[in-house]
Length: 210
Image (tube, rainbow, N blue to C red; front, side, top):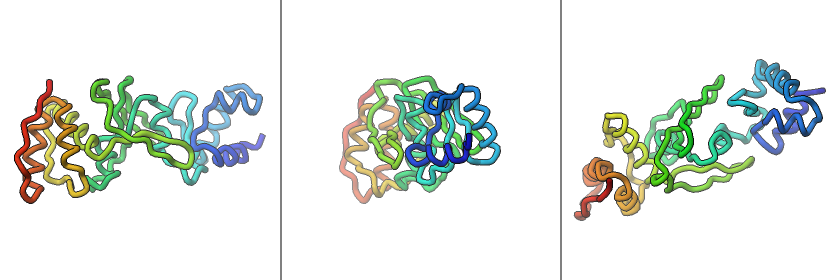
């Protein structure tokens, strides 16, 4: 069986390879698929990411973001990766950062790194679905990415500095409205940065939260 041809053919419709699906499709045992993909991983054609899941590097229009909602159903891109996506931060994280209501985990493959932080279900909102050539994934709105970033920073015991963030493209009323749905510490940490970065911000009420 010509596995280079198989991998190239699969790249026409998906950037994700699943060993069990390939086994059923081509009528071979899953172990044979795993062995074949392992050989071609050494050649750089595919990359093993998780149990039964490989990323297909021959899918030239693909992205590791295609994996976000494959590895975790209830998850979205946020935090550092979300801030970079919208130009709010100039930092380029080496790990694709996500939040999930499912079990947290960091997937470390040869070149692909995807981290899932666990968030309470009551804060699982404020994201949109982004369509790519091969599928879709969820990503936080700009305002939610900022708030998630502050929230997890404070949870880790180090309130993040906001002076390097660019709020120019951010919807400030939406950001403040969203912040009121978080614990009040998030709102109170955010407000001075917004006042400082704006040319005259009208007084707004203090947020309420847990």
